[in-house]
Length: 268
Image (cartoon, rainbow, N blue to C red; front, side):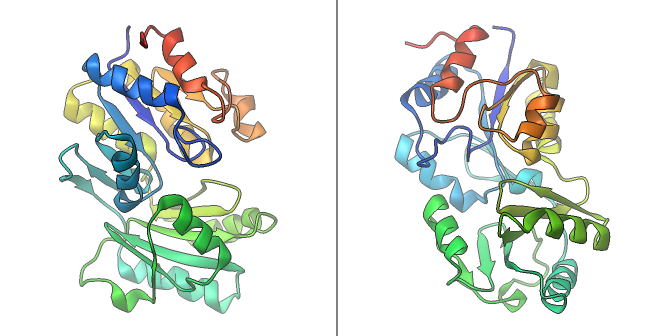
């Protein structure tokens, strides 16, 4: 095995369409632990949306949350936190509401998840997926000097590309990227999963070219470009499949465990 560390997205990657982990994927995670190879979650979720996975499957690991804005070590201590301030979030929300943009906005700051309409069926669906309940309200619920890790727009599939383009034009200093057909992630400029990967690799003194990464959507693309062993899931958008030659099977098949076998990780 020539790799020294593994990074993986959650939704659409290590979890299948029913938001559960396949046996082969879990076996691979424990095989990595046995081989003393770090496994790191790299997700757009917040930490409260990752911990139920740890509890269900009986492991812990470092996590890159909010697509790089927050990094937490295996002992649940914050290693890095960067984002944008509440004034920027207020500007975005004011614009969304003034322009009557058809979406539900969500604010994430470390453990907090604030949403303007908790009755939105897509919010309810997101709560079920991440196993966390949102708090309905506004920016007044944020602590003083809170760092916004992510502002999430939940959109209709047919509208998300137009909303993405509008927000990019209006807020060029922020990083705006789709993470699914209905989710649009807004973060501080320069914050990406790739940046989180580089920070963790530097902290562990591992060169990124010795890293493996798994992902399935546009917010994973820079991470995949930044490592020596990238794997794009077969359920990824066709546009990404045209760029990456490292396409494996879908998240509903044992694609991750097969990928590990192909690069030398022995599974019992």
